[in-house]
Amino acid sequence: MMTPAIEKKLGKLRAIMHECGSVLVAYSGGVDSALVMAVAHQELADQALACIGVSPSYPAREMRDAVKLAEELGVPYRLVNTEEYLDPNYAANPNNRCYFCKSELHNRLKAILVREEWGVVLDGNNASDVGDFRPGMTAARERGVRSPLLEAEITKDEVRAIAQSLGLPVWDKPAMACLSSRVPHGTPITPELLRQIEAAEDVLVALGFAQFRVRHHNEIARIELPPEEFPKAIAAHMAITSGVKAAGYRFVALDLAGFRSGSLNGASGTAIPLVMSEVELA
Image (cartoon, rainbow, N blue to C red):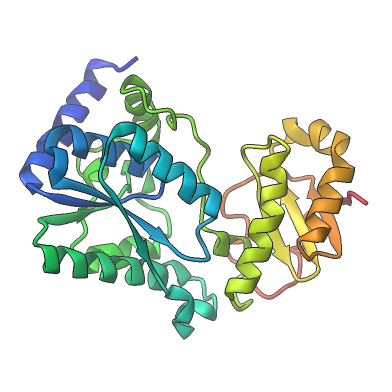
């Protein structure tokens, strides 16, 4: 249920949409961009187009879910192929890798905007994102992208509250970073490597896990799960092990530190951080 303060922020968000006139929404299927998409559609109808960036770093399962939600809401959408993996700056996997990825996406969206005479590109950054190291936000700002959730001072928790109130089924969806975030900085990114990680994570999806990461450490797949999911993982260790090994890994490990976003930030090369506790599942 929304509080009066949150309702006021939602009103500001709606006003921003009308101020924009017509919009392209950089939409990934996560709760933040889904909320922007839904409100833009409510306020602007066919003057809002959801644009889904498609590349090897974006899991196919996420694309399918994003398309399904857009279709359920009746929102016009378009798949936009991106090729950030061809940029040597991105492929080298530096700590500002996201800058080059978002540059590629927003360059393509800006081209659509200019060619088809849309008003502005919107993204899903919210007020809770301020202060984090987010080079992707820098790339967006350089290209004139607006963040209506941030402008309306809507935090992540408020995003979920509004999304739930509006009946969006993704209101409680766990955050999902791109597949490249599973690779230590300095390890080159290739489409083949991303497909390997995706195949390993698909094993966990098939077994009913919702929040997870498969971190790539050369021959080792380091699985991060919330600690409360450890018993389920141990019970399914044979299926996890065989499936992840079939994806191309030699060893499968469960990280006893549990799931945490950005655990590879600052890590480089293929070495596993020494502070990591893990047990081999097979």
